[in-house]
Amino acid sequence: MAKDNTMTTTAAPKATKNGAGGNLGFETELFKAADKLRGNMEPSDYKHVVLGLIFLKHISDSFEAQHAALLADYPDGAEDPDEYLAENVFWVPKEARWSHLQAQAKHPSIGKLIDEAMLAIEKRNDTLKGVLPKDYARPALNAVMLGELIDLISGIALGKEKEAARDVLGRVYEYFLGQFAGSEGKRGGEFYTPRSVVRVMVEMLEPYKGRVYDPCCGSGGMFVQSEKFVEEHEGKRGDIAIYGQESNYTTWRLCKMNLAVRGIDADIKWNSEGSFHKDELRDLRADHVLANPPFNISDWGGDRLKEDVRWKYGVPPAGNANFAWIQHILHHLAPSGTAGVVLANGSMSSTQNSEGDIRRNLIEGINGAPGVVDCMIALPGQLFYSTQIPVCLWFLARDKSNGAVRNNKLRDRRNEILFIDARKLGHMVDRTRKELSDADLSKITTAYHAWRGEPDAGKYRDVPGFCKAATLDEVRTQAHVLTPARYVGSQEATDEEGVFEERFAALTEKLRGHFAEAESLSARITQNLQRVVG
Image (tube, rainbow, N blue to C red):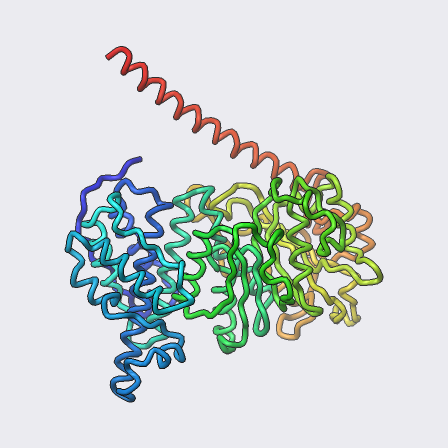
């Protein structure tokens, strides 16, 4: 539905301590106010307008705070860019500072001034070159709307402490990413993984230290949550090193800005060929990999990679990239590394082409090395903005040799896989989408850490209908199918469990697309007939 183009001045809600700390009311109200100014602009275009301005305010505020501190304590360093670089603060020229743009917000040429500000910042900061949006002066952008947005974002109260200010704008940026993903529907999934799903993966793997890698990193949500996890558990931000690759240039730019808003230093590569065909981090061996690769990709160019060194567990079919992603990730894991991967449910049971053989090798191991499948989680449906296809989480471990004491007996995890059926968890947050609550997340992660024998997690017990530590012999009796419902005791388990749900959801989405296309064609035909009659 087209929006009213009328522009009205809307004051930004103030960020309180409570709002910055966890209450979503502040971010929600701010997004509603910003969305009112959108007019008829598509969310996919508008998000770059808004997020670019939020980023500009962030780096300008950070610069001004550091500038004031240097003037007070070390005046000679106030104009030395190295003093800002040392504090992970970008150098912002005078013409690019938020105060200057705010003073010119009502000027008809505000779009041109913003573009010049973005260019000036890129010129002085090598890591931002090619990252910032620079098309604010285009005719399609209403100058009045830009002025209103600047006023709205100017009203965000950030607080005096640098870290608190960074957290507020970081939360705003992250919340806006999620809301734009929802507005864009299926296209939104290309750059955003729902926060509750990312939190499950991060709190399962606990990336306290080491190298964290995502081969299809989207807007960088995995990295943001990993940094949050370290900080919340009294670690240091510098304890982890972040690496990523993204094939979509626009999404890569969003990622770079998202991490910069959070003050996260990362090595994020981009090329249009992607991680399979041009692996920019070929020699990287990561301690933790977190990834949400595109589901069931059929045109990934697998026929050109049949002899690739990464396919140790079997050559993935050219018609589906799921097991190519898993093996690419394993290739990049350090000897004691762990990984969490989001995949479509069909990956747990499909036997098409070579998929069943690859899955068996991942479970049983190859060439004398043990299996790498550590834990499987079936998630509830409707968690994602981009698809209704049900998904699962694969957790992989290069080294499962550490045992766990359960029932007063040492159990070797190399001979077990933990299965968790979380499909009944989650709550609806709107008409089409679910989220996992903190209690849901705790239930899942506590079971996993208890099964691993971690002392603070308590004693592990199988819970019928929810979790089961199954031996490899039990998995063999199920023909190496990894659907949790087969093991935890659910009565819903069938031979086609997961595959049927996935196919049904995919067909439903396809049908909706046909309905939308038919409606559009009907409207065009009616319009053309009216022209003929007129």
